[in-house]
Image (tube, rainbow, N blue to C red; front, side):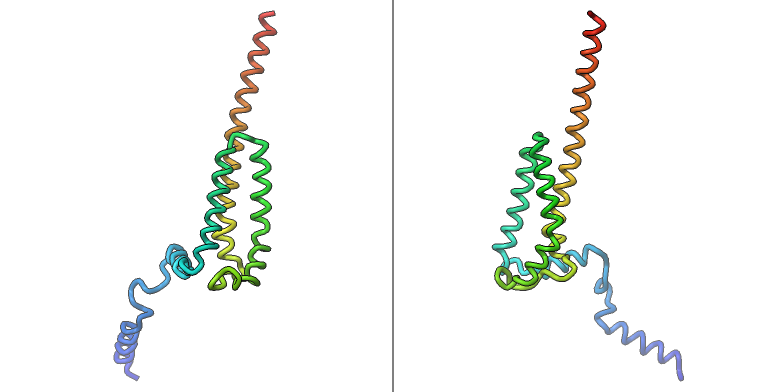
Amino acid sequence: MDWDAFSKDLLKQVQKDPKFKAGSGYEGPYDVLMGFLYAISWEADQKWLLALFGFHVFAYFITIYFRKSSNFQMILLVFWSVLVYLSEFFNAVCAVNWKRFSSQNYFDEHGVFTGIFWAAPLIILLLFQLFNALYLTSYLLVDVKVAEFKQQKKKKDN
């Protein structure tokens, strides 16, 4: 067997094969995400995707608008957490009923679409609420300490 001819022939086959051309292989998570986004038929499913987007805009708006109300923030925190917890259930229900509102089934058994477009924005919102609660708590701690120092000063003056 002529190894030189074999290797040249193999090299020619690889160079002709489109799978082995530069830039055609897996290049990272960005390519996977962009492929996922391009696979969605945005025009055909525009109504319910816009409704989902509108829900998230409303959730962010209501959370940011009431960011200084700690009691309402705790109610929202529980509510958003329950919605994230139920995302697996929502995925299962949508996987069964997808023909009623969509042109294709986005709801696989792993819940990728639901995780990206439902749970991830809510988890980011929950992180915002967590940081906001820490911020408000730090200011509350400062106010308590200032009041404590004022009370100690009044006791010393009397």
